[in-house]
Length: 631
Image (tube, rainbow, N blue to C red):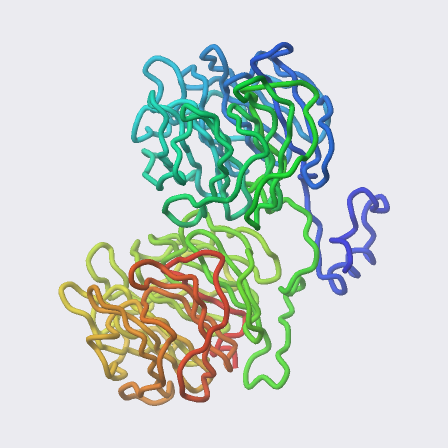
C-alpha cells in the first residue's frame, strides 16, 4: 500500500503536479497537516518542577527533554489543543496561569492568559478549536467550568458548572464532548460528567466508573473510545476503565496498569494510549505504560521518563480531539469524488454508505458484509435526518442546523446552512441533486417540507406541507418522487403516506397507508431501488416492531408485506445501493443496538446479519453515494 500523499519529510520542494496527480488518482490519498504523534508530560511535584518531557507515541522508548514551563505545572489539568499548539492549565498552589507550547519544535512554554478562577487538580478536554476546563481545587471554585479558544490568546471565559464540587478529576474528550471523571468531593467518587464543547452550559451526568471511585486518575483515548486509569480510593488502583464517547452509560473494564498508581500523565494518538510517571505507595515513578485502544487487555511497558514525577500535566499533538490532522493511508472511500462501480449493479455507480452514531460518522461498503469504520464527526448529534448525492452527504442536527461531508474526503462535517424551521425528528431523503426534510417536532408536530440543492452550500427553502403534521417521520425516493411515511402527532401514531414530485414545489399528496398503522407509526426506516420503496421497523408507544413492508414508488396504494428484521426496533438508519438495503442500529428492548441488517430490495424475505456499528446507538440516519434515487 502506498504512503499517504508525498510524505512531508520526503517531498521534492514544492510538491510537483505529477506527484499530486499520481497520489490522488492512483494511491487514493491527499495531503494532510500536523501531528506526528508526540506525547508530553509537563511539570510535577518534584524538582525540577517545570520539566517538559516528550515521547513519540507510535514507537516505544524513553522520553527526551523538550523544554520548560514558565512556572510549576504540578496538579494542573491535562494539556490539550491542536496539532500546532498545546495548552497547560492552572497548577499548584491554586494558580490561574495558562501556558502553551508548539509541539512542532522544542522549546519553553509561553504565556497564554489566565483562568477565570485560580485552581489546581482540574479536569477537561478539547477539540482543535476550544479547550474546556472542569472543576478543580480552590476555595469556592470546585464546580467551575471555563473555556478558551485555542488559536487565540486571552483569559478563560465562564462555560457553566459541574453537577457537584469536585477536584483531582481525570479529563478526556472527543471532537464534540469533554469529560470530567472520578475525583474527590472530598471523598473519592466514581461519577462521570460531560459537556458539549461547542456550547456553553452546565455539565450532565454521563455514567459511572467500573467499580472503584477514583481520586486523581488520568484519561486518554482514541477517536471514539475513552480510557481512564489508576487513582486512589484510598488504595492505589491499576484499573483501566473504557467508555464510548458517543453514548451515555457506565464504563466497562479494559484491563490493568503494570503498577498501581495515581497522579500520572496521560496521552494518546488514535491507536495507542499511554500513562507516564505518577506515585505508588512506595515512591514516585518514571514508568510509561501503553495499551492498544481498540483492543482490551493489560498495559505493557513503553519506556521511562527522564525523572521520577507525579502530578504532571499531559497531552499529545494527535489526540482524539484532532484526529483529522493525522496522515491517512488509502481506505475504502473514493478519494477523487469518483464513486466506486458495483459489478452488475442494477442502478447507480457507488457502494459507499454512512451511518451517524450520535455525533460520529461511520462508513462501510454496501455490497460487502462487515462492521463499520470511523469516518469523522459532526459538531453535535446528527439525529435529524439525512440526504445525499453521489459526492456529498448532508445531515441535520436535532435543530435547524445542516452539516455536510464529502464522500471523497474522510473527516469531520462542515456547516451547510439551516432549515427553514428549527425542529427535531424529521425524515430525510434525496435524489442526485435535491434533498428533502419532512415534518418533525418544534416542539409540536410540524407539517413543513424543506428542500436543499445538495451541490450548493446554503439554507434550505420551503417546499410545501405534508397532508398531516407529524414528527418521527421517515422517507424514501427514486429519481422523481419522494414518499414520507408514518410519524407521530400527540396523542396518535400515523399510518399516513404522502408523496411529492421532487423537481417541483408544492404540498404533498396522499399516497396510501401503512398496512399495520399501530405497529409502524413512528421512527421506521426507508430505502429504495429505482422502482420499489422499503419501509422497515418502527414503533408505537413502548412497543417496537420488526415488520418490513414495500411499495411501488411510481404508483399509489397501501403497503405490502416484505418480511421481518432480525429484531424489533425503531429509530434506526437506512442506506443502500439500489440493489441492497442496509439498516443500522436503533432502539431495542431494553437498550440500543449496534446490529446492522440487510435485505435484497428486488426480492421479499427476512433481513440477514450484515455486521455491527462501533457502538450501540439509535437515531442512526444513513446516507450513501448510490442510494435508490441514483438510477
